[in-house]
Length: 218
Image 1 (tube, rainbow, N blue to C red):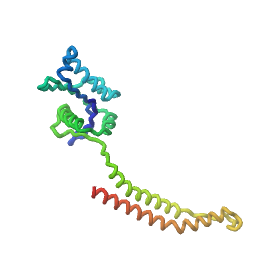
Image 2: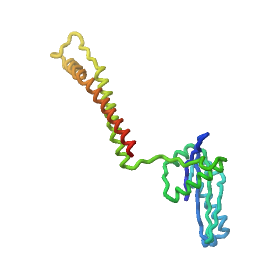
Image 3: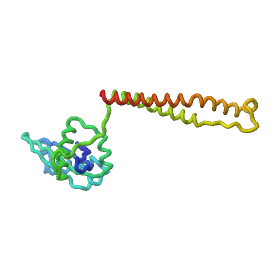
Image 4: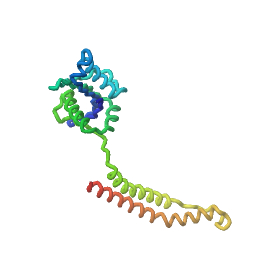
C-alpha cells in the first residue's frame, strides 16, 4: 500500500515533510513459497516506497527505514518509510484523503517522523487540503455570488460616474449621430452611476452578512 503522507511539525518551528511509505503483509505460505522469503519481501517493500513517488529523488535514492512486525499466525508485516523535505511532494500529497486503513498508516507515520526528527510525540501532525461537502460548497457559493455581483455593480457605477462626454465644437445632436449617442449616454450614465454604486455596496454587504451566517451555522 504505497502512500505519501504530508506532515507538518508544530511549534516552536513549523516545517513541512512528506513520508513516502509502503506496508505489506505476507502470510506464512507466501513467505515459504519463495526462497529467502523475508529478503524478497523487503525488496518488494523498498520498491513500493520508490513507486509511491516515482519522481522523488529522496524516495528513490534514500534507503528506506524498514520496520518488521511478526504475527502469531506466522505472517509478517513490513513497513518501509523515507522522510522527504521536497515541497512538490508535500503539495501533491495533501490532495489525497485517506480511508480508515490509510488513516491508521498516516498516524503511525507521524509518530515515526517525530522520532526521526527528534521531536516529542504530538509535535508532528498530518496536514491535508480541506474538502467541503457539496452542500457546504453550495451554501458558500451563494453569498460569494452576491459579493461578486455587488462588486461588479459598484465598479460599473464608478466607471459610469467618471464618463464625461464633451461635444466637439461646431456639431449638434441633430446633425451628428455620434454626438447624439455621446450626449444621451452621458445623461444616462449620470443618472445610473450613484444608484449602481449604492446597489452594489448593498449587495456586497448582504453577501458578507450571509457568508458570516453560513460559517457560524455549519
